[in-house]
Amino acid sequence: MITEQGVVEEIVQQKAVVRIQKGSACAGCESRGSCMAMEDKTMRAEVDNELQANVGDIVELGMPSGSLIKLSLLVYFFPVIAFVAGAFITAAWAESLHIDSTTASLIGGFVAMAITFFVLKWLNRGAQDSGEYSPRMTRILAKAEHPQTEPPG
Image 1: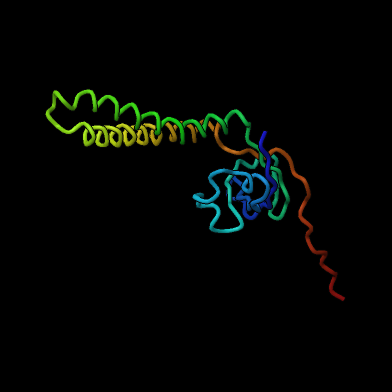
Image 2: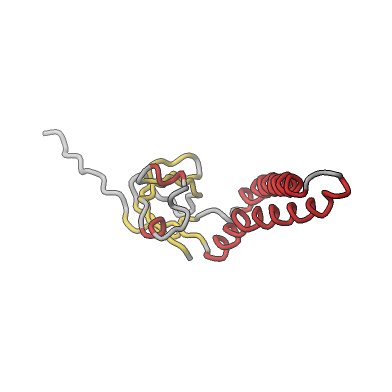
């Protein structure tokens, strides 16, 4: 399980908005240079507040490693495979269509990759509902320290 720590910033209905300080997981990530999350030193995640955390609590968020690997394959591997397959298929058809095989390969590759992105977008809707690829709050590490109010005197 991949875990990160964060601070609950806001509670909205049954969801908690958690601010995560980017740390070890981001430092070792191959995509950190192109990730939108690298623009800031913090990231925000909305998770189900199953543990009834309060604003200011330090919580641990986790995501199963298997889900992360599946998600990585879907996002990075399949579009590349689609591009290559589309390029080979259209290159084979190029002669019968009377067009240049290089041009056909490029067009076919990009069309196949675009179709893959649309399919992934459609699958994303179902994945958001299932929660399989979403982080979960696994435990509360520290409760928020609320300042003591002194009685008027």
